[in-house]
Image (cartoon, rainbow, N blue to C red; front, side, top):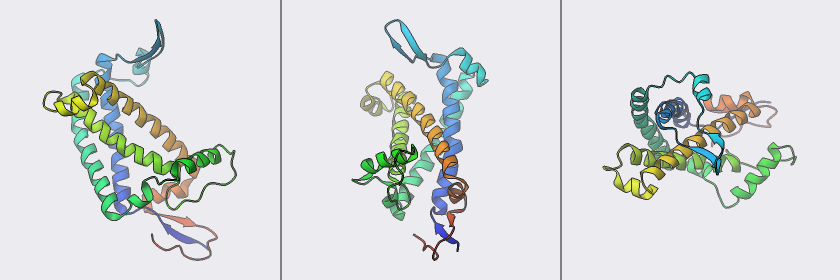
Length: 225
């Protein structure tokens, strides 16, 4: 017997699918800005291990090297990113969805068990309601990162007008570095997220489109959360 498991409200799905292309455009336009002054690298003494980014990297992505265009797109999508993120946080709070999202006191311990399960070291995954412990930590972290990106972005964009943000970031140079590190964090999150979606299968992916999963061999219909 099949049953329906309702997982994601329409608003959550909307915010998710809007945020994905907006964040991709933010990262791409940010790359158009960064190439004009690409100063970051990982080195030891005179030895450079990683330079962000090489000329070959830009050529492989066919980056057009249009600084003004990148800045225009970045600042335009910044407002969409901010508004969508704010609405998401407000909806999560007032709808009670935060109960399924925020980590609890056992989340960090259980997240380790989830990792062991994903690596096929542990046979059983810890019990979960809507998101497992690792997802709770990751999704909460990405919200905090969004706030960090907004603050550091404003500190870079208008360091005089938003001098307070610049100050709490440690100055303009520190804010720029923090903004860059956060962007790398988004890329890493995207990669892991896509891998996990593929691993979870179509039923899980469908839930973010339709709002529900189809549970096979269920004894009875699963009630709405």
